[in-house]
Image (cartoon, rainbow, N blue to C red; front, side, top):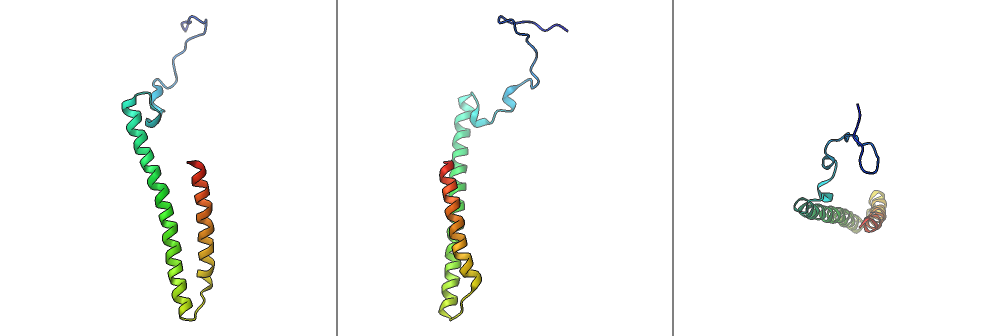
Amino acid sequence: MNSPQNVEDNVETPLLLQDLDIQTPPWQSDNAWIRIPAQIIVSILRFLWAHFAHFVFLSVLITVGIFLSISVSRGDIPVGLLIALPFTAVVWAIYSRLSHERA
């Protein structure tokens, strides 16, 4: 089967994926009516995800701190909470640095 040749003398063959737009994400589309709303939605989701993760780390730190202070006021020193507090703070700092570099 002969394929037609174009002006540059290249053989023109049909595309394997007849429609290239199938593989293009909506936020990278050439059509502005699709791309702009998709980019807005993606940016909102990224904003919510980043702040939700920070909220989770803060709530864990506050909860561990409350339980640790209650235990210490009763004269008890829980080793698990003493380990959990700095570990959570370090993980949160690492996550904050990584998420800040991606933004």
